Length: 210
Image (tube, rainbow, N blue to C red; front, side, top):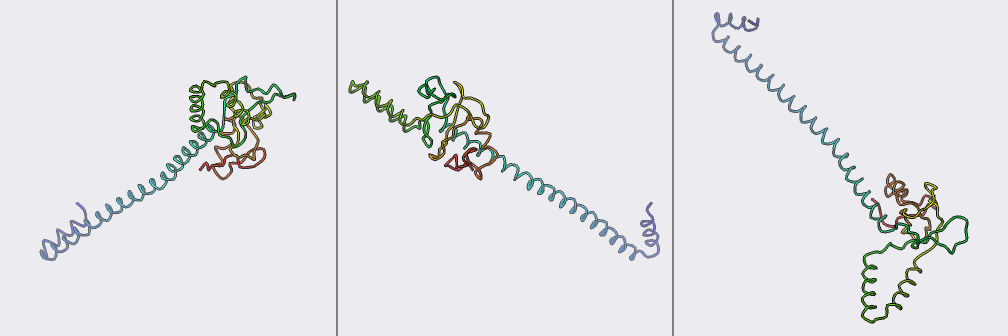
């Protein structure tokens, strides 16, 4: 038996009233110590939970920001890129390296409104039975939106080939083109703070990527 309790029993035999008071005091002190210990454990658990939440929230927010940033890059690439075909090769160019015909800088690749206008134009041509004239006008419009660019990506230094997806700037003052995947890798880590062309350092994307 604990020495403390032995002394209490001895006191109880000699002084019953005083021993009862001492017993109650010991019980209260013991209970209070246990309550304080329990409260300390609860507070420690709360602090741990709060720390984990505080640590995980920036990680979760960063993941959401990265996903949104990637989505905006994909939207930009989709609107300003095309897959090269054999008809895009500029056969009139006399340079040693091949040149390809792509839309002018700042020109969006077949936006929905342009497609709608093209369909309306084709419908009008069919109704007027003047397909030759309409086709000629449509070709002239397309040619006015095209330009010749060197057939090499300035990021990976590989020649463009049929089937490659290339991208051009939404900035009319930037004339450089690249492989779409090369530019995606370039834009991805820099966010909106540095959406600049790798060659001329002009803004490559007019819209914000962040």
